[in-house]
Image (cartoon, rainbow, N blue to C red; front, side):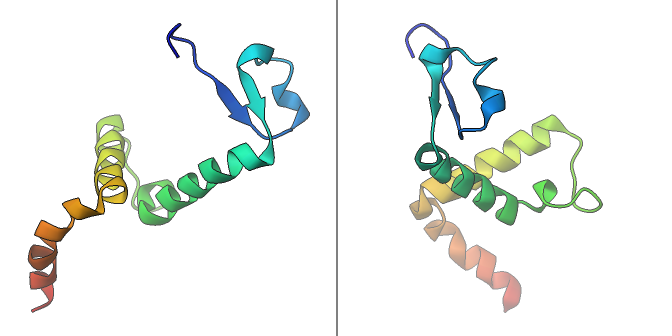
Length: 92
């Protein structure tokens, strides 16, 4: 948005309606479904968000870099092609 304010997309749980500004609050399961799908993909692929007992990172920098790397390959699969042979060489 041009005014620097964010918008809020939530499901229709009643607790969201009181604190969120009405003019910037969009709600509905149809709006949150794609967001939850992306969150699920991130949790599935990045183990540090899946289990607290193992594979965790306390460094915010490492979490941010992991998310950037995830999106680098998730959003642009062509970025993976030049690296495939290097990755597969581990198994030969």
